[in-house]
Image (tube, rainbow, N blue to C red; front, side, top):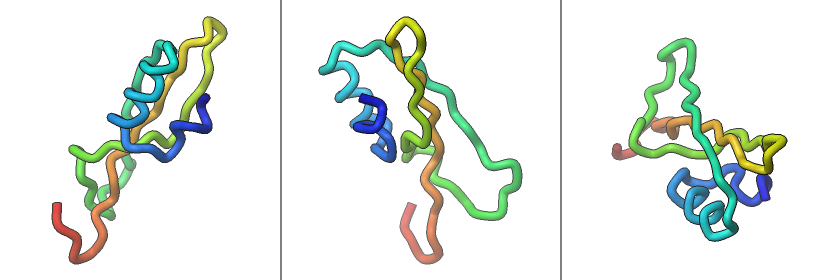
Length: 71
C-alpha cells in the first residue's frame, strides 16, 4: 500500500489510505536551505513507512516552485 501513495499529492494519499482502512500519521519535512522556493499549500508524499501496528507514517514535502510557475 505504501508504494501506491508514494509521490501522490497529500489529499489523494489520505483518500486512498482511508478507503483501504489504513490509519496514518503525517510529518512534514522542509529543506535546510531556502535555495528553491516551495509552495507550502501543495504537499506530496515523499516517504511512506508501515508501522508495526499496520498504520502508516507519511512524510510530506512541499512542491518546489519552478522558475516561471504560478503559485
